[in-house]
Image 1 (cartoon, rainbow, N blue to C red):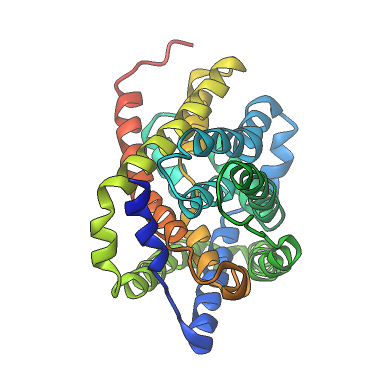
Image 2 (image 1 turned 30 degrees about the vertical axis):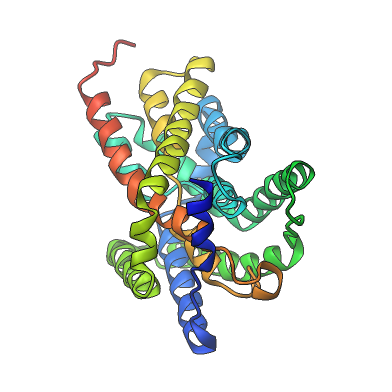
Length: 317
């Protein structure tokens, strides 16, 4: 399995300077659209009933990355370092917007779901690069000791600077637009989010169009890895909510929010040569790309499956 996954390292995607400009514009547009749905009142409401929200944010920022770190170490003899780092990158991303829809299908706490997505997205420019650097560097050090591979250097400051620029500015602009143009925001929020999804899907399709065979050849192993990882993420959310004894509806939303990550963001970050420079990564991070891309497909399937189970289970509290 590990030898087979090594073949993913040959996957390369080169947009060129003009293509990267378009990728960055798409990323900025996506984050601007996400920010339109973030209301300042959300952050105020956290202090009114903080237990579930703080539990959820802790699970997103600390619990899931820590569990992912444990999983990649347990799977180390079967997966490659690039696949492992792809899993860590996904765990470092904020919650995905589709989690709000799936949380509603689950009869969960919609307000909690929206609050978690808003908070983790708003702080993603800081938390995402920090978590990827922290857990990725620790993983690299451990496997370098036990394996005959060079230690992977994960540059923190260049990544932080780029992510603050690419994510922070659009998020701030989106928040300001929603604050000062509320009527226009209501009209454009859904179309903007829908268009951003279409643009992202088109970009992914074009990006991987020359590497479909490589993806198909490794599909079986990728499915297994993402299945295990996503199952652990959903379990982290459910167990965390159970241990904190939050209401059942809140526990359902914590499960969905922790199990659905904005892997599309992770994928776009991987496309950016300023964040993952070829001279450091040697262009060999195909494993990260494939894992991150497949997660974006699978978490929708698993989320809907969990929602189906939750809907058939009565809430007794």
